[in-house]
Length: 86
Image (cartoon, rainbow, N blue to C red; front, side, top):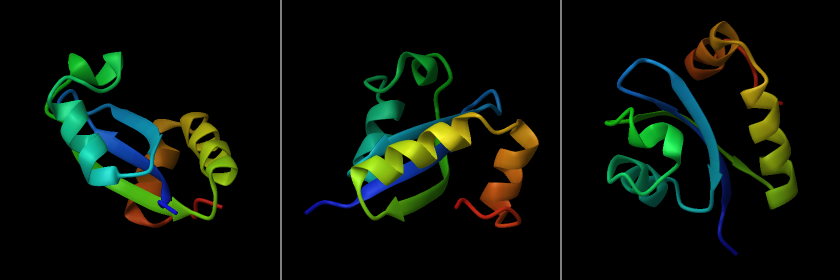
């Protein structure tokens, strides 16, 4: 079974994009080729700054939602390892 990952990209305008995937490196590549989310298409290149493997799809999607609700400061703390994701 493939891993279930939640990731954060830093876009060229210094904003963060959070997503879910089963293949982090391939997904980042797709974002940078303009084949990812509409949000990242206009903000390329995007740099992977954080990712975490989850036990299953359900927990990954819940974590993705939780991160998307965080403030920019909370996301920056998570990326730096100051804030725990779970």
